[in-house]
Image (tube, rainbow, N blue to C red; front, top):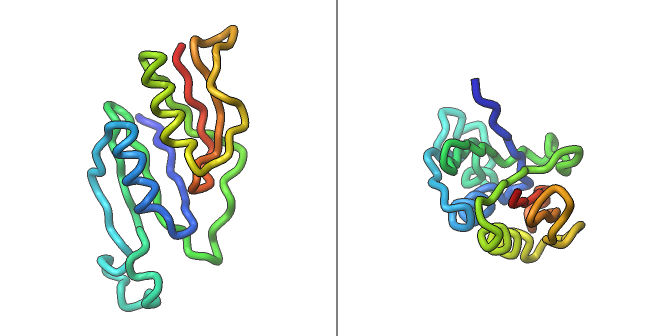
Length: 133
């Protein structure tokens, strides 16, 4: 049984998943807005285009997410999405692209446990760890 991270966003899920799809080389397999759902008539006009659920496949892995209604949204904390690149140049490319407009906690560098490792929070508030072992 797979474990899949489920990310909540503050109204930016679609933009985040488009970026992740492009940078990670994945494919958005499913996306439904609140306005496309059977509950569309119960959702305010400003929330119709927000994402109710999205699924992104990257190789064998799945990342899921949605826009959390404002009363339920909490800033992500206590976890990181971890991505392990096969080549150092892939780790560098992914780190640079996803950390742009975000905040870097640890620059991508060689460590005693990895050829490359770095940590950042992306522009959507999601914490990441990128490595190349």
